[in-house]
Image 1: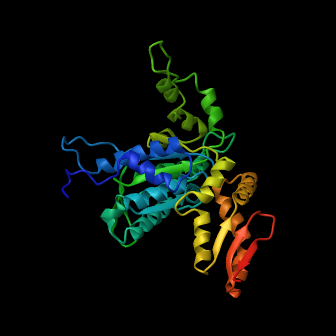
Image 2: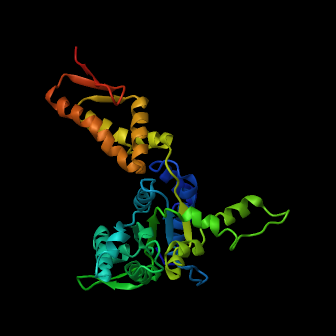
Length: 336
């Protein structure tokens, strides 16, 4: 493949269809991410016109457990590029930020099998980026600012020396930052009078409403991030709270859903697992109380399944397990 040929990147609609198999809900966010990823990896094939297309890193905003990390993981599998995650809070707690950044890129190189060229086209997801803001009542957060400045360098593109003396070029690495950004909506309401686009009778109001409701760089600056950093995250996708219905769908619909995974575990024991929808609704209700999105689902389901899995291997006569309620004993169907 020559540098002038386009990379074999799925179209945005195909990317969304792939995400739909693993990420439930968040339709608007998935479309934003799909277009951004498509544009990024398409531009890696040099334009015939010689025009250099600037890199657009992503910012994913939404509560914990709403699918931000899963979206990035799914994209990396679809595109067959190396992927690593890091937490901004960990970077802020160390005295040696540059060493930690080198460690992140070393892990990216490891995920690429030591192929530094492939690592240079990977995806780095940095979560909890909102925690780098200045504390309430303070105008600056020195440690958070230091991390933002350090990240700026690699987000813009730099050759970073690894511990083994080799270099990773981050020019084409896609950086995705994520965070809950609690309180950002209030800032956006207060800032609506600034940068608000006025309308005329013949304007397309749907487009104008979308532009006026966007997260602006000034909102992120007011929140506590430095302007230079927010300027490197021009594309923002918002992930919403997960309803109980969405939590039920997350447990049952994706290709590798929790239900599918545990059914496979039981199948390997020669047992069919049947769980009623009511059980998933009960799990979703408990998870909603925990306020951690989908992250608590596995733990709750593990509590349900663990005692059954303890008994099944010792009783080869069991052929089917039926669970009708989270608060009732399962029915064990044995050979006649």
